[in-house]
Image 1 (cartoon, rainbow, N blue to C red):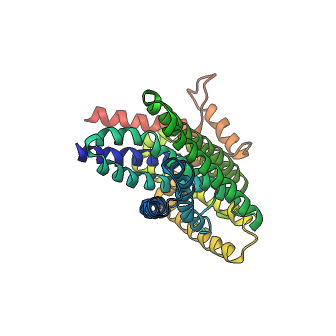
Image 2 (cartoon, rainbow, N blue to C red):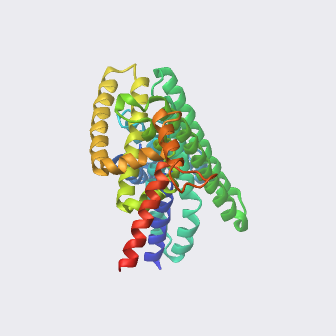
Image 3 (cartoon, helix red, strand yellow):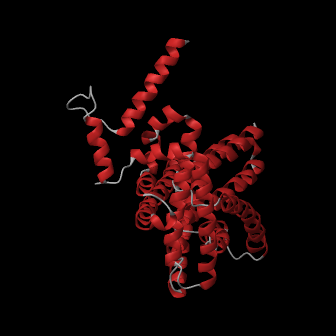
Length: 374
């Protein structure tokens, strides 16, 4: 029973972290930074518990209620913030979407290892403790960490006084959210406790998801603004990047022709191009620090090399087919091709014929001939 409880206390929080990570459509967050955040969250649990014993037992500065409602939220959120203060200064940090994911990761790391302590200390009700915590306390920890990460991300390229203001506001909101949750646990009735706690936890996650969606919309605008000839990205490729969230739909014909492996390489290329556009905007915003500007310039050059390697992996013919899906609006060449296709013998009136549909029909005919031969 204890082993099952520990598995639940680990798997479900990690699942929530994975789901939040998948919301980062452009993949700007560093996997290494996410792992580092998670590990620091785990370390923070033991630091916090090491502080609680002398403060509560020896010094007697707080009673049980005051410790849970006032001191614990401040200490735990401050500890979780330390790693975010480090990560926000790294060149790989682009926008508050990264801060939200990293903050959520540090909160999940804290929650998982706190789960272990609670389950081990309450073996007689280990399964109940695990199930109750993963949908309430764990999500609260993760959401509170994400709030601070968002605040730090919003403040990154501002003056020091503004950065300090955003940090304090973010930390204050996280502490109040945490303290309010703990106060609910103390005062809510036994029958309604889980429903209230789970409601707060899931509401916090929903809020973080909405903020991430908003951040992605801003990043999409950055991509539209910066991605283009300077990075050797065609207008058709840039149009595909802007529709990256619907890649499964517009790549379906290419998948049918070239296979799933090629389609996956196209998605990889589009993500690299999206990251390139976001990096270029980040570079434009990083005018205050020469060191940060130089580090971002080096990262931008590396990303360009990765993009070119990915384009070669996709192949010239597949890239040409991708560009056909997103022709430049008003292109005279495209208009001539469309007119020529419509004048082909057998073209039906009122049907939309384009170069890509011709490729698709040729492919279907080839497949049918192969089936007949077999």
